[in-house]
Amino acid sequence: MNANTSPSISVVIPSWNGRMLLEEMFPALLAATNEFHLKTGGPWEVIVVDDGSVDDTISWIEAIPEKNIKLITRRRNSGFALACNLGFSACRYDTVILLNNDVIVHKDFILPLIPHFADEKVFGVTFKALALDQLTFCNGGKIGEFRMGFWKAFRNYDVTNGDWRLAQGGDILYSFCVCGGFCAFDRRKLLEIGGFEPMMSPFYWEDVELSYRAWKRGWVIHYEPNSIVYHDASTTIRGTFNRIRIERINTRNRFIFMWKNLHDPLMLIMHLGSLFLLVFQSLITFRVAFFLGLWDSIRCFPDIVSKRRSEKRAAKVKDGSIRKMFSEFKGKSFVSLK
Image (cartoon, rainbow, N blue to C red; front, side, top):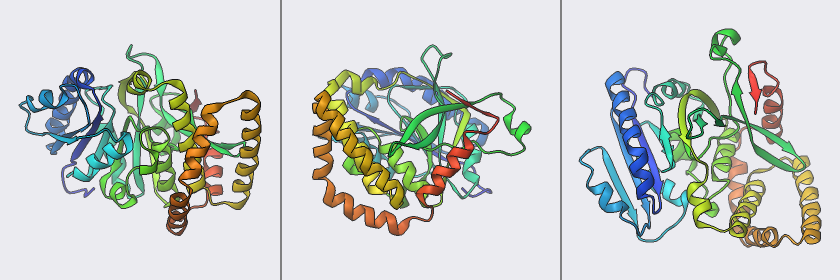
């Protein structure tokens, strides 16, 4: 972002049969974008990607008089990753904010994230999410941990007090990954890296995979605790897909992430050892969804190998360096693990 120009934002909202959710989220979102424009003078746009809905989402959006709201429609449902990528390609402004259609934003959530992108190394920023009661902590920064042959990406942390920047003299709040439901990206870097991995459609792990590629290219991801949203996790997924289907997709995408992006020989050996153990355990416990997901990932193997080569060529940071960095970071005095 050019320091001499006003900041500018594009908000992307993928939505599938989400008319009721959009109606709930839009008042707070428009209040936030108007607050952003009032305080910075910067332009903004909201892009809703309707992913093959059969409800009245399209007519509802088209009836909104606000000229900065744009609608992209798909005839058939393609899933979160592809819908987001379509929205990303339509963005005009420097900072891209990605929101689920079931996220309610705080009026002042935009301004705290903007300064992060003055740093040329910043790829993305993830927000703090509270439950809809606006009190219960749900999501913060993410600590990446490589254990038992897999990256674990879902351990949250928050800061111990609101004055951590002064107390720590410039320490940065890193995050292993953005949370795909509420985060922001540098548009140029997002388009350069190609957005979410299409193989991971319709959902799960695409935000972790994208973030890991960014880390390996030498970029960084920050956590901004003052950018606050309110969220009831996985509303659309839980209401649409059964448990076996969800576990199957989760398993497939977890393996796609690992096989495509893990290049360190020792860490890869550890992963393969854990994979054999998982197969044995799943045979004993008759985890059908695991084997379906494993088979789905094996079927993607030609594409995985091809993209693995590309990512290996593009990588500037080693897997082990990322592992060491987060191992040290979680011991910082201001980091409160959740």
